[in-house]
Length: 204
Image (cartoon, rainbow, N blue to C red; front, side, top):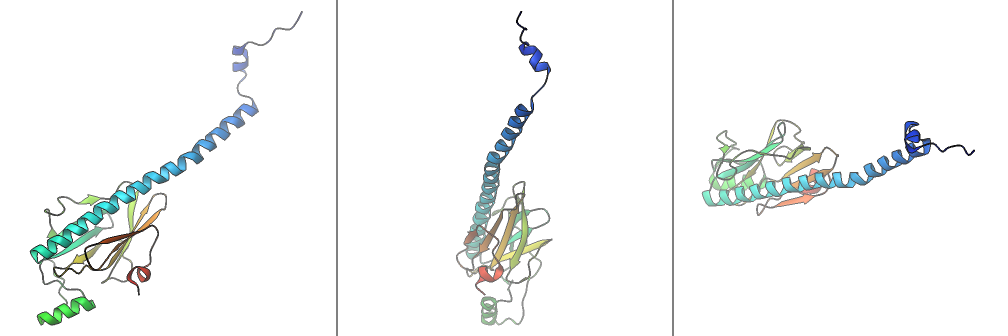
């Protein structure tokens, strides 16, 4: 008599063979590798969304400064990864060539930064937050040449159309880096898909 073959249920009770387990492991590795680019794309989209919102707020601050003849500024909260627009008086000056020229025209003898700034809810109704997984790495402004890595940083926008040069560095949880360069004229923003040094950004 021929020996009876083991039933399918009997083979299942014996568990996976070594070859079957190797195939399963290979499939898991393959799926993980294919998923990484998609995960990267999600964070890229998050960074792009943040960039568009910052560019929009900067443009609104620029237009408001010219219309109202007041000084505006972008506020960067590095601790809470938030940003918004504040409005202040037209007496705020930076220690820059453009600011010194303007101060000389007004007959001033010092740099006034004042503490009268308040959030302008006509421009930014609430404090905006960076998407989850995205954070401020540092901010470099014309006043603070050294990178600001904690606390608050500010980028001023003046009524005569001048914006304080600033580089805002963003980083996501996958260590993708993005540099946002606030240009001195036109209330414009330039995006660079890497960490851009202040020397390269400001042309120094």
